[in-house]
Length: 446
Image (cartoon, rainbow, N blue to C red; front, top):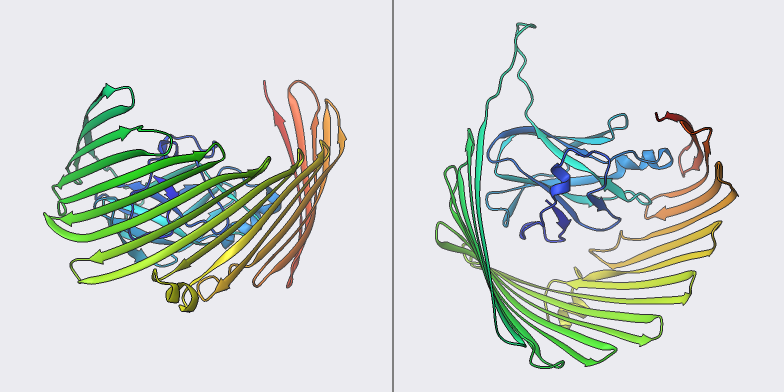
């Protein structure tokens, strides 16, 4: 499971089967700067001591930045409500095996997930796989063996029904019964039901109504249930103007006792302001109620994006985000915990030989004070033939507490049908230290 969720205590992560397919080379998910990435795994009450998060090969130029990644560990019994287990668990990066090792102690939970809290400045971390392991206990006998037997079975039943009484109306229903047995572990019976009605009245009014209900019966932990009611209205007022209004209620219960209730309202507007100039504006409000503690919280988020293709080779994005604890104007303007950031992205490719990237972010407010960064990256291809390519690059990055300059060179050469050579050289200058690296690799394929 993997996704982006800035509120990690609640929410179901999207399934990501590629994180558990045994392929350690293909990227299944990416951790990007300032995105609150959530990476999860289902362990069904098995004892887990260590998580391995594979990245695939990292460019040697950026290998030093892998140590900047930090995360917190959360657990869940139902995959929807999460509790914090460990802040900043011990993490190390193994360059030879291209993976992070996260030591979490001995935990027996149904779900675990890592929530990113600190990011490399210039490196987007590719994630290819996640694995969970239990450490073998040491014994006095060095020749002793260790055997762990587990029996696992799963039965899945899936039904989908669709009915269209008119040309502009459709009714949909789906039912999924998912039974799993794990010995030792947790036996689980989960029932998913979804009902949906869509009505395309006209281009100005296209409503839809959806109900989701999930019940989970466990053998080792409490039973849970989640229910969602959602109504959404799509409107196309002009060929260049589209709006979406959605209202959602989420309920979470344990052993048939309501624990939390959440209401959210989302308004999105997309407009083509001019040829090659697009804009979107989103407003999201959340009203949360903890029934068990009789406590309520509200928050509001604003996001505005402006995208312009000034030329066929020049793309510019501007993104503004703002969040606050509260939904009134006084909270938006006066709450010291409110804040946000503005981001400018410029991508320019004047020719096939030259590419330039500029990225800048500026945070404001108490919660976003440290979200300042600037990145300048340029690459020039000096030689490009059918046999060899030579690229020279310069990169400068600055975050709140660090400034790094660096030059790099990348040379690839097809020596023959069977042999390829690649060489990478870099020199980085930081505020406290400098480093250099030369890496040459000869690859043979027969």
